[in-house]
Length: 544
Image 1 (tube, rainbow, N blue to C red):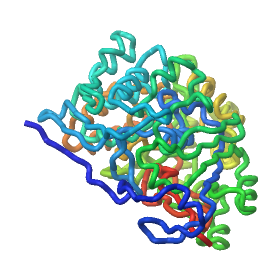
Image 2 (image 1 turned 180 degrees about the vertical axis):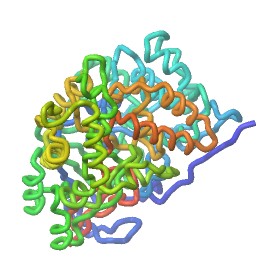
Image 3 (image 1 turned 30 degrees about the vertical axis):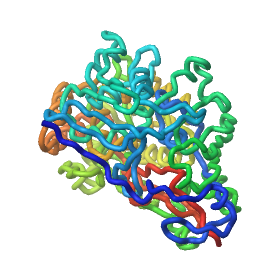
């Protein structure tokens, strides 16, 4: 007995009998809203850093994910509210035991070179991502999805061919799970699961992602990439829904200084940029139609290096707890950032679907009480005026990260007498330092890969690929494993949050809001999508 599930077509999937050239003439109207479209249908936005990779199997940051979603398309996409909608897959069937998913792929999906997109392209991509030979920083995601034999393949104990995914034919893809996973299909909008064109990888090796080499299946193709400067993608005429794409060209500019980016935005050079820390109240008053703040599925935190060769003083949970208690999170959110962020005492973002924020004793205390407890804990650990605690704190280069780090170091100094050395690092260097354990305390930011609490809490699992603290707690591992098969995992999530609030391997500081400036004539942004997963093909500019 099987349960058959098919995704309903949405207005975005309806074929409109027009061409891209019509949209660019300045007189066309949007096929759904009827708005008059501008003649300029380009989208230019600011990124803080150069992404480490735009290879779906190697990408690991949110900015890179934005680019990959334009260049490639997976089984499913998300609509403006974050719900699943058809991508390459048009529907799927689930076995009675919820262990086998059989996806039907559309027969009109093509690669940018005209080749058909087949189920074999997905099989190749998933097995490649799980292969130790690729050493993907996101290989653990395949394991997180509970794909059959993923753990053994990633560990090198089984060949990639043993991974539980196979192409039955060109338009039928079968995925076998090791255990039922209620949110499995939600995970299929993540770039690690996107298809890859094997012939291109075989032909160009690590250079396959360069302009002129890359073959992709998304709404856009890569036309220019100047590292540390800009990346340009333009409409893919082979994309199955190209007729409904309106934006012709997308350019992401790497601008490290958010104030410089704001200046360029106000000069009309950018259609979207980040609001600098502390400036949202002013900008929202001056530009009420352009300054926007909405909940965003990311958590900002500091992590401790708990490796065997890490700082001895930070192995004491009382020291870590004292440092966390002494952070006045309300000052960070209300004064330093002032953009709608919320103070965090749990790792999981408060707005995560189905998540009930548990009672964390620290959250209900006054800051004065937290400070007193922090002083007592640090004194009991042997640190004080005669023996001050010293800490090296690293963060990736950004004025907002610097402002937060300076504020927290001052709080530690004033409340606890802690001496903090601050160091900023370029993004790639920073990622490597965290991965290698070259830090005492490091800035962390985690954005949800799917809208469920495990996307945050699984980072606390001992073997997680992004457990850069190297925190190990068998009880936490057991709770997270149980949550994957529980009818209601909230009790497990509550227990994990309460345990890490005591152990303090990380210090949650605030839950993100997406605080940005948008050009007044830019439409189609998915403000209601909690993950803020956006697709340039859904954007458009209206005539002024």
